[in-house]
Length: 257
Image 1 (cartoon, rainbow, N blue to C red):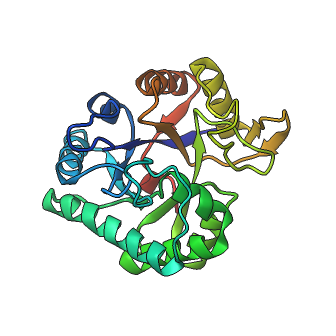
Image 2: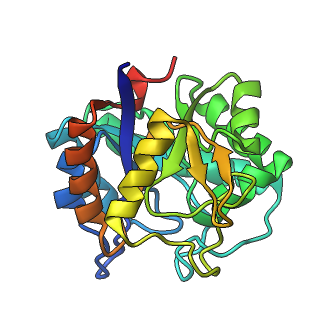
């Protein structure tokens, strides 16, 4: 059987004088980059540099909109209206799309960031606001999110294609949601364990939750957080193991119908 999966990373998350991640080393090794749009991280120069790196390495790019929360890196739950959520999403996609167009590139996808992502996975109204904003901007865009989520349902209802995302470095609850970063065991730092879990998710479509329960999961795309201390090592190990296991790394546009 042939297996094909996208390998993505959250990038462009430096800001001003503050440097984060290993973008120049990671970008050549992945197939899709989720680029911060200035709200939780990133600034115009960072967006420009990241877009140029993506173009030079001939990989796909997508917008990574988050809460307007630079201090909290977009990982704090904020209470905003659905109208604000839709407007903020549109604003951020448009900002990154300007850099894409200036480089004769096209956005492939949108993936919400951090707390916005996690909240929208469970809040149907927030999910609908985000999905409709993406569809109104460009209904050719793919929404990258967990398969078992309100975001996926809202995207399909809005006529968008959905790419089902799994995480190499995160633990799962019994319902398929990500374990909160505030909970012990939420982050998987052993790259060998992380890769074993990925192979199972891709080939068997299951994962063992933090409570030891085997739950179903679907993987069109694998995410490695670009700000993680072992991000580059994870990506290198994943590529090598995938090649050994007969798993082809391809951009989302080649995977999602």
